[in-house]
Length: 80
Image (tube, rainbow, N blue to C red; front, side, top):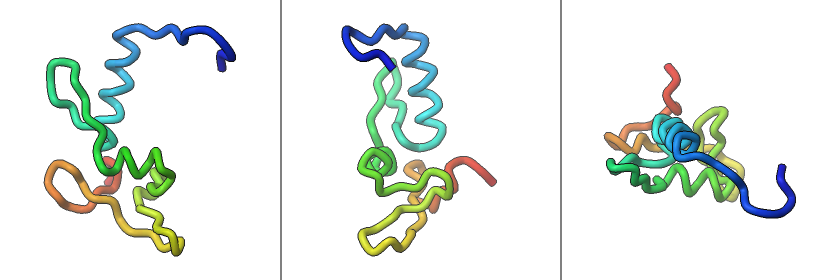
């Protein structure tokens, strides 16, 4: 990882990464290159979402299934 100076990235790299995050439900594609972080995305960044099992981890270490942001159903992170 680069220790100093700006991190170089291309528009294509950012789009590709955002597309993958949207497929997993961590961000929502609003169109025209604009993405919004979802509740699952916030939980992941806060360390409250286990993306291996797609379960929320609460303070008591109990797991709760994450919600599919597109239709309100529980999500398995795109796996069947």
